[in-house]
Length: 232
Image 1 (cartoon, rainbow, N blue to C red):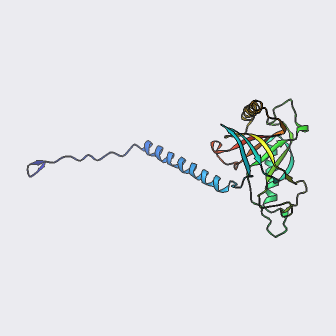
Image 2 (image 1 turned 135 degrees about the vertical axis):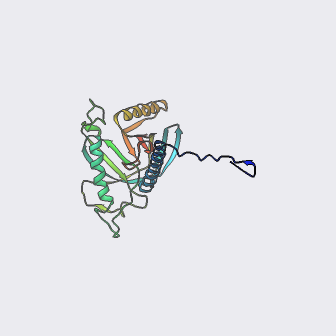
Image 3 (image 1 turned 120 degrees about the vertical axis):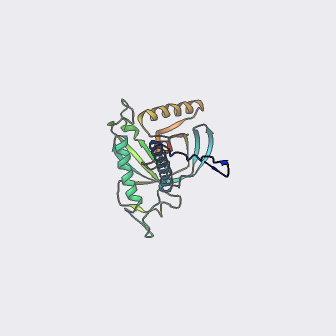
C-alpha cells in the first residue's frame, strides 16, 4: 500500500538468534564471570605479605635474590609430595589460625606467601624422581612469619613438632613458572635452573625448595610457583 501516493517501505524486524547461539553466549558469559570470581577470590584470600628481598639479577624467568632475615615455622612430614604437602600445610595452618600460646592475647597470625617445601637430603630415594606419587620421603614444609613478629613476640606453637627458626640474610637462585607442580614440570624447571647456575658459575648449598604462592583452588594458569636454591 501507500500513503498519499507514496510507497510504504517495509521495515524488516531482525530475527532472534537461534537458541543454540543464545546458549553459547550465556555459557561464555558464565565462564567469564567464573574466571573473574576465581581471580578476585584468589587475590583476596591469597596472602599479600611476602618476604623482603633485593633483586640482584633478573633474566627472563630467572632471578637472583638476596632475602632479608626472616622467621619461619616449619614441620617435618613423611609421605610423597602431595601427601606431605597436605599434612604440613594443615599442621602449620592450625598453628597460625590459633593453636598457639600468645603473649598479647592475639593468637591469630596472618598467612603469608609462599609455602615452601624441601626434601631432607639424607632421606631422599635417589633411584626415583623426588615428586613421584608413592615415592615417600621426609619433607620440611615451611611458613614464613609476618615481618611484624620477632622470636620474642611470635606466638608459641602448641604442637611441639613445629620448629620456629630465625634465618639470616640469604641469597637464592630462582626460576619462576605457572601451572601445577608435577614431576614433569619439576624436572624441566630443575634442569633449566641448574643450567642457569652453571652459566653464572654459582655455587649452591642445600636442596632445591619448591615455593607455591596460591591457594589450591587457583586455576593452574593463574598460579605462581618457584624453584629456588641457596647460593653462596
